[in-house]
Image 1 (cartoon, rainbow, N blue to C red):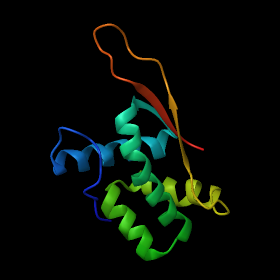
Image 2: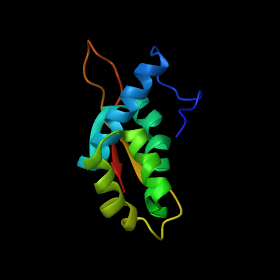
Image 3: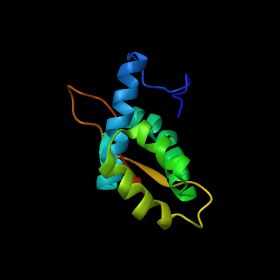
Image 4: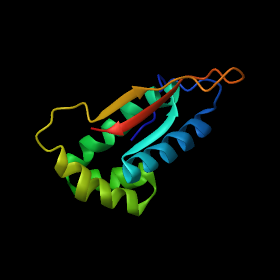
Length: 117
């Protein structure tokens, strides 16, 4: 799966952005809900939704594509055995972003939860 140029994770090179998205996607698939900044959650959403769409197809090609993208057998197994069948009749919108309050006076980053619906 190609990483798109329109990804919006400012201040990172493409290699750092790939590593960040892979790591957060793995955590989201295994935990089903993670806390991160709002910008990272918005960048992660299309990445994870594409992986869930591949898991719904459940073909050998989609499994190999997902494995090469995530690089983690445990996450791929859960994606294809648990998450994919869960969304078999859903047309899209597999993730939800819920905004949280800001951290505090010294760190004003906007926080959010991203979860599988």
